[in-house]
Amino acid sequence: MATNHLLEIKQYGQSIWMDNLSREIIESGELENLVKNQGISGITSNPAIFEKAITGNAIYDADIEAGIREVLPTYKIYESLIFADIRNACDILRPVYEATNGLDGYVSIEVPPTIAHDTQATIAEARRYFQEIGRENVMIKIPGTEAGLPAIEQAIFEGININVTLLFAVQSYINTAWAYIRGLEKRVTQGRDISKIASVASFFLSRIDSNIDGKIDAKLQRGVDDINHEAVLRGVRGKVAIANAKIAYQEYKKITSTDAWQALSTKGAKVQRLLWASTSTKDPSYSDVMYVDQLIGKDTVNTLPPATIKACADHCNVSDYLETGTLEAYTLIESLKEPDINIDINTVMDELLAEGIDKFVQPFQSLMNSLEGKVKLLSPV
Image (cartoon, rainbow, N blue to C red; front, side, top):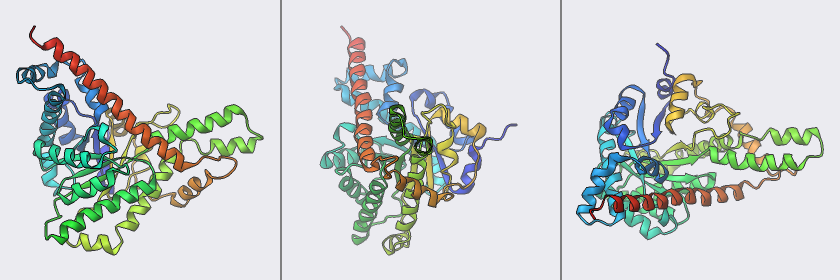
């Protein structure tokens, strides 16, 4: 029997979650099989995933018709569909949650992307989602925007599990980690338990390389002075995201060694793990598991789309590579400032955050439009 390399990753302290959810994989037993036999220990979802799951799929029609009979607005019908899927997925993953003492077994659902820059609306929706879904192992996704930081802190204070999403810049991750710590500290001052609160910081990968590679390719197309300049530019392609992630992990280690964190740890706090997201390779010339192989390490999560899960099970090269090449990672990121490359990584990260929100808003609005059409189609004349 062929080796499933996914199952080897756990020994290095990394959990594998799946970036996909639909009623189809729940009702067919596929999700249960992935959890029991393939080493999948959590689920992440987003508006694009739900658009794909719901649009054009008759499996949701009975619930849509029930919503029509209750005279629910389209948005509430949407929530009834996704909340049901989230609850069922949480129940399938509950044994993992219990077996790992709340380390894994989570299902993530994002607050509406349209409120990414509204702190109070984000807090209110995170609170409502957590209460209405009613599962200890649900994790509410909040974008790591400037407005998201106080929402993250407040949600953690209230005991809500949080997946901070759309992190690109290392500084954004650092800000997120301290928001988590502040939320826990506020609970401690009130004498409240912090041992059951979990959080991950979702650090996006392939989108960084796609953006940087595009800029490199544009420079190469315009022409360069000499072969050495060309080699310098080509040497950056496909390397920035992993270097950036390795630097973020070093920041994680610094934060978890601070007195502030150690004080919380003695009270039972769980570390906020870095979660590698956007892990499907966009450039076909790259390895289809490059964002898995090179980022395996302790106290991390990697969330993989189904195709990457299959690829990794087949041919991942598993070892604890996350802390190899750290010095080279810093050197590479620093080299982007050099005249031969001249790419401002902070500008890139700002662009990616804005694009990331838009990439969730668009499918969310598209799904609302599609669902509105289906409601009209299924409504009695």
